[in-house]
Length: 266
Ligand SMILES: [Zn+2]
Image (cartoon, rainbow, N blue to C red):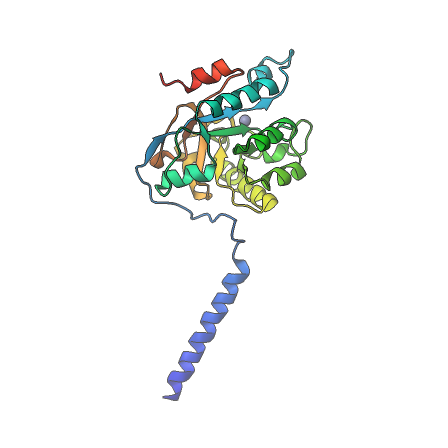
């Protein structure tokens, strides 16, 4: 019988050694695992997701920049319009739970997203959203952080501590993932998430494709990197749980009229 006890003890030691080995190499809890995936469901609902860039005075000498800008005054008017018309701004977490079928959306839900992580978010947008108590998502280009006209890491850390603000990824350098060799695109998708998670000490659950460019391969890569949802620049307001990595958005334009028009079903 004694050999049986010896065998048992050896097995136990091996298991303990294995456990220690795994513990040493386990990622921190908020970091994604490459094997992440989920069972796809069939939930769908209407939820306009607004796609903002700059909130600033309109530049005279930059037509592209001007088309991506709304003045602070008109942005505030748009916020008032949304609240006066019964819209309920919700967070990305609420969207994810609604796609999972575990949360019922409030009446007239809406999400505000801000692409490119430009400096005006901290200076102009964040104080306004905080005053109104409106949640929003900032999609950060990690390679642009700290360069002129973009948010700094300390600003990102500060805004991420607000319960209203979610930080999402917008890639490493704003190059379209579909233009990159597959391994480089995969690395951008995963590395940008890891950098942002480590900076904010929070899980990074969403991504906006740089330039709105995506294909079947990039959506698979985003899923495997551990994101819960990803946004395109494709126009639309209906989201389906089996297409959670190609969610559409709408552009609110630079005035209350343009926002009203964007929100009006065709
Ligand atoms: Zn962008």
